[in-house]
Image (cartoon, rainbow, N blue to C red; front, side, top):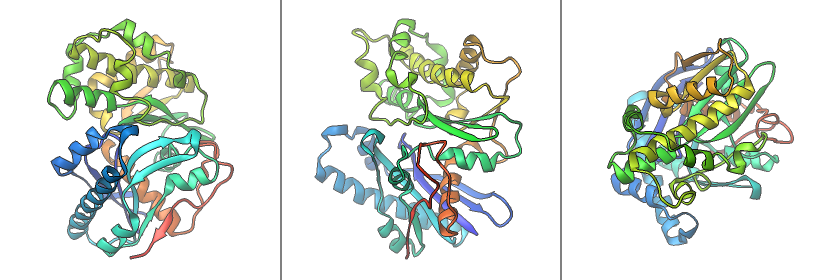
Amino acid sequence: MRFLGVLSGTSADGIDLGLVDFTNGIELIAFDTAPFPPPLQQALHRLPGPQATLPQLSVLQADLNRAFTAAINAFLKNHGPVSAIGFHGQTLWHAPAHGASWQLGDPAILAAATATPVVAGFRQSDLALGGQGAPLAPAFHAELFAHQPKPLAVVNIGGLANISLIDQSVQGWDSGPGNGIMDEIAQRWFNQPYDKNGQIAAQGSVNDALLATLLQHPYFHLPPPKSCGREQFNLHWLLKQIEQPPAPQDLLTTACALTAATIAHDLVKANPKTVIFCGGGAYNPTLIQHIQHFYRQFGGRQQTTFTHSNPAPPEAIEAMLFAWLGKKRWCNEPVDYTPITGATRPGLYGTIWHA
């Protein structure tokens, strides 16, 4: 009952691998993030969106397969065999309105190259059942944090941000941007992969006019179920909203405030007793402070407790999710995403590719 969850998040900052033992509950055994080879990471960051050509995508797929294989084999060499790998891959394009969500990484190749069964295609299973294909985390959050005080909100801040609301039932949705736009600004103007500890954003000022314009995006006013992608919220979109962008430092601070304000707005509506932060954004104190500031400003309850995920580290939760989904499919256990993604019924999520 040991399963390995593998993914590359929308930030494309590396390959996350989480080994989980399900013998007695949910126990994280090991977690690691394998860096992408620099040329591959640069290709992912520079991928020209809708203008990407088939030759570009074919080569990118092959390069990703090699990177995933190397990371998995190195991990298994150190931590031993597993029953199966729950594999999500690298999201390339997410368009639920068209019934589409595209992840790169070939499970057939990975199964053969790692000599381990691979379970993949979780988003496609949800789309097939009429759902948005995302977010997939809330059903897992409900089980992982079952003993936390309710109502509970789990805020996962990766390239995008999503919220799980857990009480008598489980709901979940993408709130909007996470770290993605901030990462793009840090890479473009500060020669940094991301704003470590929110140090740059802490020194800038929020451009209130730009923030107000950004918050008018229709997505933020849609009711759940809803999900979004980097093709929707990115630096190019942000810069199109204003004729004269502010100084780069203030631009990053404003992007930080955008993520914080959209998360806080949804948290106020959810009215949780406890908020747990996970994902890479949990380590950005400037972002967390902005979220708490907007939460109070928007009328959030004073007694809400804000904390980080425990005992599993915040950055490991998403890899654990795909280990959990892999285990569910391996054991033929259906998952119910009907109140989360809008799927029409519970179902078996993922397809098994045998080694």
